[in-house]
Image (tube, rainbow, N blue to C red; front, side, top):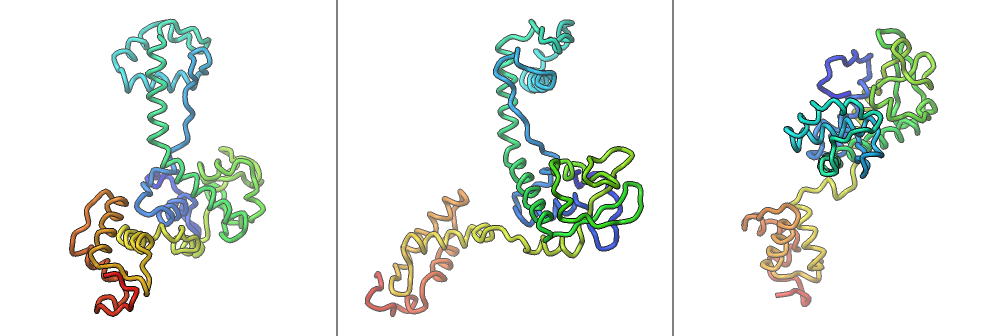
Length: 281
């Protein structure tokens, strides 16, 4: 469920809806890379290379891809009566060139969606692990209202975990069954636990928390082997930091910032020219 959905249920006291917990965790985990569309970006499968291997879903996707790439040709095909027989794989109007165009379009869409799909699946996988180990507490409540009950760690041991995240529901009262229209319960995460999640209970790798400026400075330290008894010239440090920043961001660092960063990574004695016999320059 996406944050723009208007049918989110009211949160029980002390809890937050699973969809909101998903978004909060994603923003903390990926920072500015998180777009908010990960929850509705699903993994797509490429079209088969041959038309006669396509099923009804493949044909529907192929038609959509052709509409994007060649609208006039797609309309022409839609007007041909025999296209209605595509379910039996008799589509003489489609040429190999048409199918290749559709396949290329689908491949391009898959590539464009891949980063968002990976982020969403990472959040789902990590939250599931936290629920399964009991480090994150969840509860459920019947759709439409009713008593709230805990959803134990063991009850997250189901085959279709993705379905729980997709609909933010589980079966009711048997939580091991898939939700149905008549028997379903919303899933919530305890609010205090969600706050810990978004404030660092699962921190990203250390390097992911560094700004490009810090990363550039660390790169210079490694490349020039800067340490107390090995202090390169300020100009050399500035140049190395500038190169590293350009490699990381594709942008140029101002001379003022290069000098400031270079000054910070060198020892205080080096600023005064008293770094010892091993001082470079």
